[in-house]
Image (cartoon, rainbow, N blue to C red; front, side, top):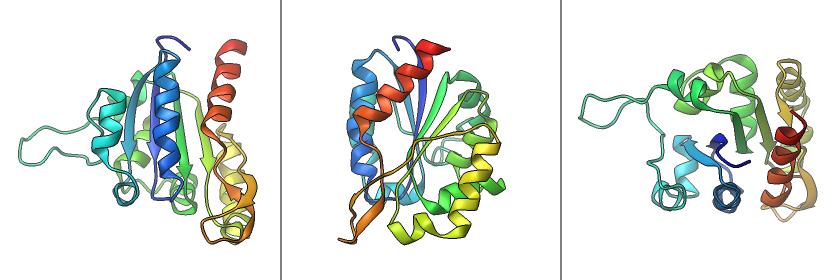
Length: 181
């Protein structure tokens, strides 16, 4: 995966801590990674942490405060060899499925020309809900690749399907994709 350009989208889930490990693993594989995070993601992991790991400023807002410069979701969408959204909350999946472009991550997703990998992370009832399952099926129909969540203990202390796949496995899936491309 050396020299691949990866957009790592991070959403507001407790599983956002795993994104730091995913980011570090992608960097170790030789990828250049640009993090784009939702405002809610900043409640779980800081842009400073992610910037330190990626060596790049984290993109979260459309505009840079008081400088007149803006972050181009179109340029990001053209730059990437792949986009990985991990963790992907039910809210973000719903916005992706329905084209609700109200944050930088969704506008980047809608502009992306590269393959998109989505790693859901949510409580078991949210994941199993018919609306979430319909949105996941819509994303699949658009050509997105869903990285199925695993089963286990969740943040709610319930046990079931909804845990974001482990970073090492997500990297393996990306490697398989690029090797078979």
